[in-house]
Length: 83
Image (tube, rainbow, N blue to C red; front, side):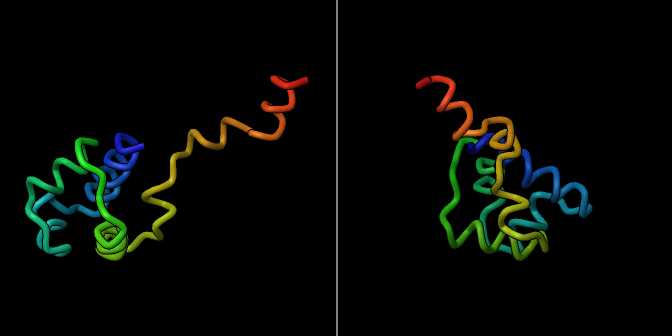
């Protein structure tokens, strides 16, 4: 999850024309810590996720949702495996 999360943060940040330092300053975090989040080396706390969401002006789901989840329909796929 963290790789997708980091890619989403970096992508949205760049789309908004923000540097890592700009975002880090807004959320009161060291730039190196933000870099670790963006590379997937570190998972942010819920509080940090909210700060990132607010700073990027995007709903939490837009940033922290893995679109690949849509490719797996648990009910149908599970029924096929069991049945």
